Length: 269
Image (cartoon, rainbow, N blue to C red; front, side):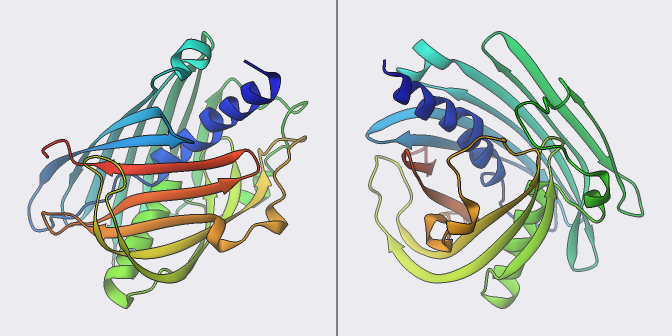
């Protein structure tokens, strides 16, 4: 495998499994506690390179999420990866607030974790292992952590906004323990999706464009040029599943090394 291809695959693991986690957990069956299980596939080119299993427990006041992700197919031969995530968001009036967020991943025989918690004043405390390598990434300025939320809670709020106003337009200050960035989301209309892979979603979907503006924790040397990003480079499709849930059903991400697609998969078909 060429050096360029190695770099491409490593980019998928470090970035796009994170995106899979961020955009894969949001159903709704308020009024009673319910557990829901979801399955996603990650495609790079013509190959399935990753899978995720997600369990969600929610009621009117909280949403709990547990997820497991792993590489699949030929990717396991070169860059096997496994990860787990846990999140707890709490309803505060009309908005969702972060309470706890954690990630734990294993890659190239090394483990890394992040644990975050928010107090009643929305101040965040956290611990990570290993610490940031400032020879590789920018530092995270502590002054930038005021009123931040985890990526899951931000997307839950986007779904609430779509339900209430029919638009995606919002912005958030995001911190996941290692990266601090601003997330900007914009409505891009609607589309009737076709099930272009077996068992994938088909039907009407709301399209939300995403931009990520790095603040800290991003790599010192990267081909990513966020100022050149367009909302259409990173699209999330929200559709209603057969059970009536408003849910992320597809994510399309265009980058310099190729296209990554994340799809909700119906295992019952």
